[in-house]
Image (cartoon, rainbow, N blue to C red; front, top):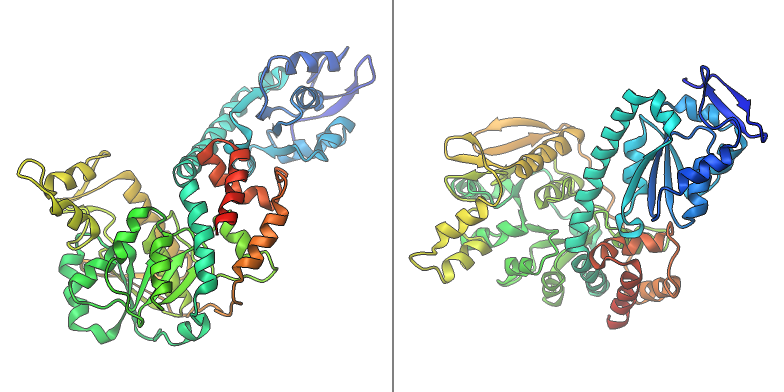
Length: 487
């Protein structure tokens, strides 16, 4: 602990000391605090380095009452010491304030800072604290910047997909309520003693797919949506198809006939046109959720979960397919085309939707090869082998999948161009879920959303991704109500 004792200012305020150094004015800490707050003309979200006696934080909140504050000290023990000061104790009970140490600052930022609600972040420091903790300040600011990178990445994705997700979720919830699929019976019929063949659409699928064809009865084939059409072109029927991508182009994966023997697993954020096609065709559709706040809210609003949770790791459908296989009881997984790299000048196997699109109207000067090159060279490439390249994001996907499987007790067995993972213990999940009543959910949700929800309410969480897209919680609130009216 760094703080040693307290003293009193001339006006009776408690002042913390570090050695002989007072952290506030010994004459008028309140006036000093007001000068601190006056530096900032706009509010939103503040990270204040140095809690000390808390007077400057109180002045900041008085000047910007709608703001949120993460107040930081070097160590947790310092915070506990400072809570003895009445002003700090009062701040600890203020829902606008969160205390954090150097150890916990990253979590505090990622959990508290919501750009769609709070706008820009301001980092500031109490001058006396900054003078004492110069080295610690640098380390703490570094951790704040690391947290900001994560928040910014999430916000960027939400800004791009927020509207698509919100629309898809409402439409998929409606489709889920109209589906006649008996989930428990469907899962119980899966032969989990077989090997689950997880089919991604990487270039090596062109070579390895013959292994499935020669020994089809040994595999339960789980295709990612991108690989679905590639298998269809090769006359290999998928036992299951998993889809998580919400973009409209995903519907292109499902243009062919729907086989009622195939199980279709759709994340609630997935393309709703594809899901609706399966449901209307009488196909076996299982809807899942992977963490979107609206999907989670809809699944649990009655107090009993209505949709199974399927993890996507860093957001990849390959991990979603693997998680489905694990929760269906498989202990032996083999991955085909899960390259997370560009091989032999190609990003995908033959027969994917891009393959068809790029070849449909190619010319001598703009053929499918030049179009794939444009796709691959969008970001810097890293060579990993002969005629094999990857990118930073593809590497992160690969690492995410390896970590995901390791954390679930799977060990990798090397086997050429396919990846085999095995475990000694089944992790089959319970698949006993109630029917989802869309009409009742909409009535409940609208009753909760009649007025603009409070910032920390579950209802506000449901519209944050849409708010990121629309740059306004107010517009996102109105849009969500509009979706419920249309459906």
